[in-house]
Length: 134
Image (cartoon, rainbow, N blue to C red; front, side, top):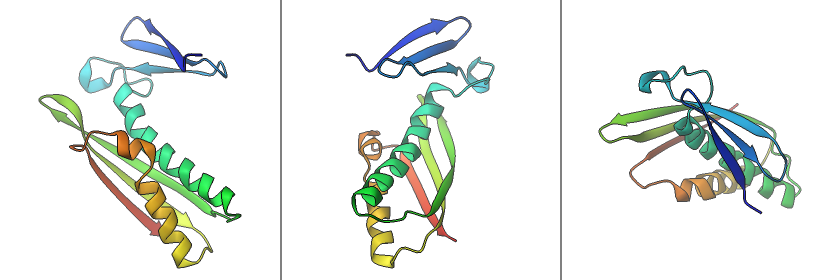
């Protein structure tokens, strides 16, 4: 089965459907590239996928090791380069409240920094990640 099906919606939007679940999302070109900015842009999704992947693999490790991850969320900023137009940098600021011991926190940070999306992005894309422990 294919992962997803994507349809172009004029003007400058797409609808992507996850084939297994039927869930869908819409993208839009960003304001600085002829779009309305009404939805995530494709590059927004690429950057957001990094943070989502980091949180997911942390959750997998925590579940597999009977650990309580605690409360964790993040803010993300994507920076674009002009020529060629591409993602230049992704900055992620995690805010994490946990009672885990320091050795587990360090393992989880390392797991996040080495998630599949982090390893799949072009090496020229700066990945600036900070963890603020609350």
